[in-house]
Amino acid sequence: MRVRIFISLKEGVLDPQGKAVERSLHTLGYGEVQDVRMGKYIEVSLDAPSRQTAEGRIREMCDKLLANPVIEDYRFEISSE
Image 1: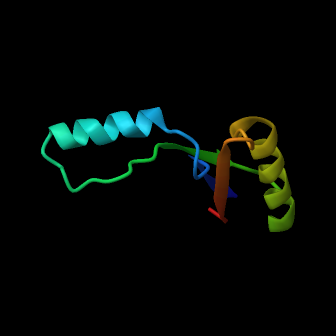
Image 2: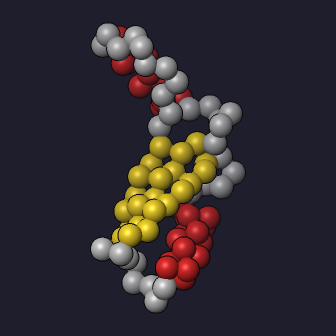
Image 3: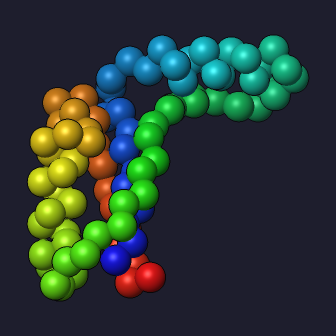
């Protein structure tokens, strides 16, 4: 299975990297850009006996290592590639 994991800061958490990118885009003439938020994208190949097992294992990985559940949200998509 192929898993795509999307991690982003929770609403209300300050995103200095996103603000820096927003300012840079404005400097380059993209004044219409508003509220840039940065995040992480991770792809994982997983050998799991079922989709349900894969979902459980991915949640564990995100909660324990890949995302900081205090300040980040995550979602994932599983495909059988």
